[in-house]
Length: 314
Length: 298
Ligand SMILES: Cc1ncc(C[n+]2csc(CCOP(=O)(O)OP(=O)(O)O)c2C)c(N)n1
Ligand SMILES: [Mg+2]
Picture 1 (tube, each protein chain N blue to C red):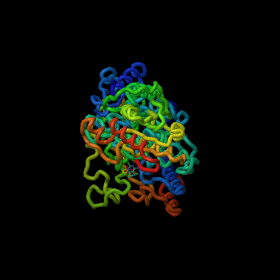
Picture 2: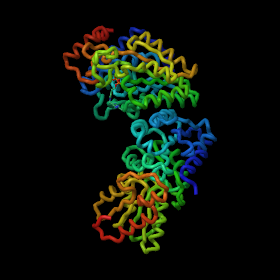
Picture 3: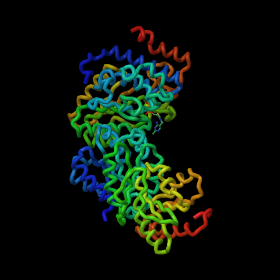
Picture 4: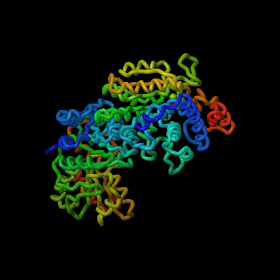
């Protein structure tokens, strides 16, 4: 099992060898993000920008204007909170070919607590025109996403987790505006994203033993992910659950709810994720359980939805 | 590189262009009822000097990869940049009339996706120097011999990001980067005049109590002070700054003392003319102040 940060840097090391446009710009977190592995092999394509995220984004925009493909590497929270204006005006509004590696996203960031927990990035960037947002499930999908981002011209935000989760068999398909079907089922349609997909797979295994038949879709691209694609994928289902390691406001859950509202059919959408609350620093298992993201807790939410009559809140 | 073959304009020609530019700014803003005047008039002599004498740029090849770069970090003065670009041949002067109108290439703040010849999009203050530093870094990595100029406001320097970029440019020894500070002593509203030595014009200097040149020097920059309305002096200072590329590894800052609203009697030194719309009578006065009869007779 490779963590997403290890997969990210491994793929970049491979690409950088044959493409000297590819650079890594570090916000003094190279030892956390594993950009240090890249720096050791390609010192000429690595630039330390220090603890100055706004300048970091601006430098990347300037370098991209001359044809470089810079990867801005820092914690996701500092990109979407500290340097958001720069991401917006200098990159998204100009279509600059800058790639953002948002590291240590979600709740599990090695015990750093709420200051560093990135639980709003998807909501923020999903609302930003011109941005592409990829939320890979595991290491293999991360590597595919890095390749995709370098081949694609324009801004990309890659949401990465610190710790490894179980691998997910996505069939090797990574394409924008697409949901991958991981499991067939009839009682409920579950849509998940990022590393929460692996925990959702485990949750649905538990539910299968309890007699609940769930269909499972994975979203690697949150943007673009059109309302049409979501509506088509949901099909005739009336019970939909979204699961993400992110606030239930504005991320995958918001996206799916918006899409489904647009068709005016009675479908219940239960959004599993971080309720409108800050989290805390604690071991991973504690956090996943406390904030409702462990396989068992996700399974409980899905089972409760399936067991309650349509028209009731879950 | 075509400008190298052209004869350099005389100082008098540049002075006339700047006066004409000021008139176009004031009259366009007044007709369109949108745009920023004070900082456009304070920057005009520098913009004309850059575009007509200093920058290696060809209006017919706006994407030339070897062109000198120019970023107006104080993007609210877009109308000044559009005006100088129009005078220089990037767009028809008549197009200035579309400023800030629907479908225009001349957006309220410079948008590089709309108008060929713009090197950066700006408007949110404090960001241009980082982009310029990024260009300078990548230029060096690619062995390019152009210089990147970035113009900032003095008020704009209150943005923390500016200082991130100042430190970064020094750390990376970007002697192919030149920052120009339009030190006009006013921002949009700022601080009340307190009668002290740091009060410039009708409000307090944005950097009252701070020795901005010493701060830049402390950050390892090469600091040059100049009167931002003295065109012969500006030509010398900008040319010298360009020549430092590849020399001592220090970025250069041109600290240009200017007068906000320069050239027009009722706007000079008045914070309220940061933006504003002149009446017909005021326009008539400005026409006289700028010596437009003489300028237009040339
Ligand atoms: C980040 C940001 N904050 C506020 C503004 C609004 N604003 C536009 S111009 C201005 C004053 C700028 O003063 P200065 O940099 O001195 O420019 P100048 O005097 O040359 O017009 C302000 C506050 C802005 N454009 N961007
Ligand atoms: Mg000012």
